[in-house]
Amino acid sequence: MIIRLNSERGTSLIETAIATGILLVVMAGLLSMAALATTYTENHGHLEARTTEYAQDKMEQLLALAYSDEASDSVVFPAAISGGTGLKIGGGTLIAGAVNTAAPVTGYVDWLAQDGSLLGGGTTPPATWFYERVWQVTCAVAPCSDISPVTGVKQITITSTVRSSVGHALIPKSTVTTLKASQF
Image (cartoon, rainbow, N blue to C red; front, side, top):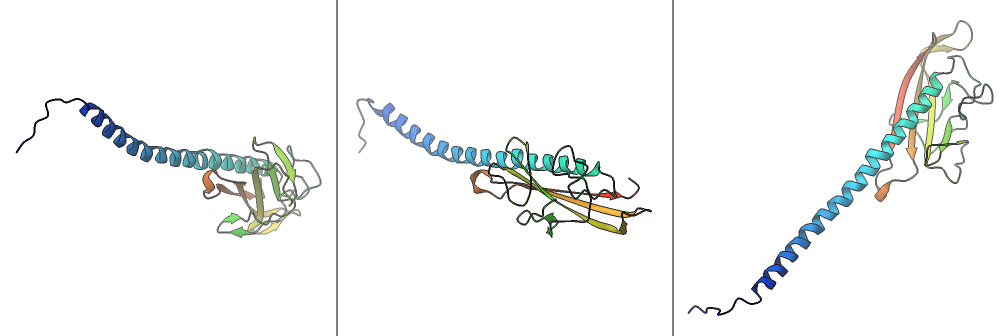
């Protein structure tokens, strides 16, 4: 037995309610993807790019020093002619190819504010730090003599990291490495 409705009143309201329910379920899924995309973009598109930029800035500053320079203070910009370590062999220890940011060494670390302005050096971070740069200078091709005749090749490794990430994701970190020959 088939019952026919004489009136279709209210059916469009039911259809609208069902369509709205389906739309809400779909939108909830899309909003979670939007939040994930925003977090990923901030961490990998912005913060990692900044850590790479700041590591490259420090690399350029160190490469501008003379091979035999062991006195310039590269923690300040522009580098002061005395009071620092220059390109003296030393610095932090390497862990998986990156300089250990958890154990900075005086003279081989500096701190940056969130806007990238230099806050100074030292193993104790300033209260307003957002980026940390640590570096290590090693002898890649011995002998690395700073006494005339100057010989060898030094390897400079810089690791830059950020204080915190968005969404408690992996902390963005960048490492750059280069070689500096005694002729330059």
